Image 1 (spheres, helix red, strand yellow):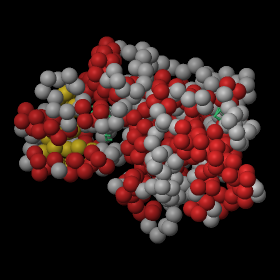
Image 2 (image 1 turned 120 degrees about the vertical axis):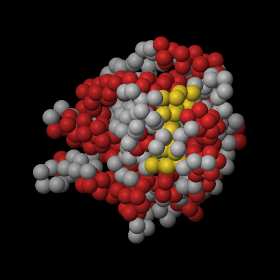
Image 3 (image 1 turned 30 degrees about the horizontal axis):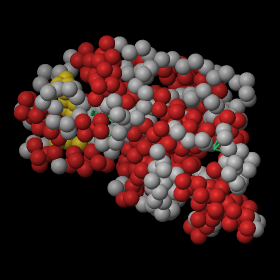
Image 4 (image 1 turned 90 degrees about the vertical axis):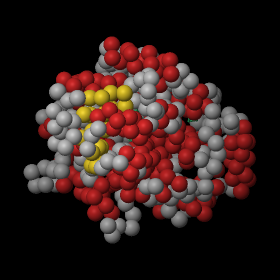
Length: 508
Ligand code: DLZ
Ligand code: SF4
């Protein structure tokens, strides 16, 4: 049977389910750069360049393995701009008997896909995406009979199921499932994070950079310098560098932030994992091997494994389990527009200016910057979830809906009312002062809670607690801050409220 196999921009894996049982003599792989995908949110220029360059290199890799690839570039004169349109054109060219595709990472595309068979008049087989530890069916089984879903329990089950970081007795290596308490050390001023490997663009990538510069000039972000890996071999080099140089120190300062050090000891492999250049199973095995060889401590390796085998799989499970309704909940009733400084970085709050600036330069920010700086502000200021989510989806090279939405909607904004996280990650400026050097260069004072010179995050924090008292005060994990708030005299409450109102009204 002649088969047309569609491969999407985040499916760049040789063991992809849609490439199984390929008949090299008859089948064709279709890959297409389409305007729908490059513009449905105003993606960062570097993100578009990364994905298109990785797609073109993947097509080369397939062709080198004698696979026929029909590749439609964005500047192809007949390009229809959509997956469905390109499939219709490709069906005319190749006259396949069926289409095979791996399920996409986004509900929007999945819903579109369901209509393709009827529209094209041939069978469309949608296969499971097998590049995850936990299938959608396995996750559904895990949720059965549970009133709340907690990552920690899911993660332990995954550790056992996949024999990861277990000792000879089958118990967690190092004597505990979780070493988070060791992973919150502030950064000593003299700490020197390592240099990161960058990959100079080859001719294929340079052509993509020219295309992106010409077509997406108005999109957010700096296109150059461009140093992402865009081939499997280079992504593996970046990963090996992380394992050797960064992983031993990754745990200790996982939550630290430092001006001018956007990557610290973080892996920065999420873009490669999420487009399929790296396989999560290989990456987890490699980290385990570093622990077994005594080259990396348990707090670092466990912290890393929890991100990949725990969080990443958990949020994907939640996404498919709860969509499409999940995206439209707004448990805290947040309706404010996203302030312009998320795009310009033009704010006197130094923490936000630094993180937006690094995001613009790199299409990357590390976890704690996303959660506790841009995320925390959006939570405290009551920004509408959909606007925050569109921003995160646009600006980060690793952002695809299945991973971005639950992280932002559930963990950052608590918009699901506590389905994914047991409490909102709300913090005052004191947290940022403890975990970063941002406050040293700030116009505001993190030690002051009210008045013109006070750190806005301080009064916004107390204002957030007051605004959401009826929703959050009963949460046992919020008991401590609400006890503190209860000790505030009514004049103090009124002052904090007035400062917050003044600040929020001036936001634009
Ligand atoms: C994100 C993205 C972009 C920017 N461009 C393309 C593209 O031109 N062609 C393509 O196949 N995929 C692209 N993608 C990734 C898709 O948006 C992604 O496959 C869906 O979000 C489903 O996960
Ligand atoms: Fe951010 Fe407040 Fe520190 Fe300024 S003082 S950097 S606004 S936390």
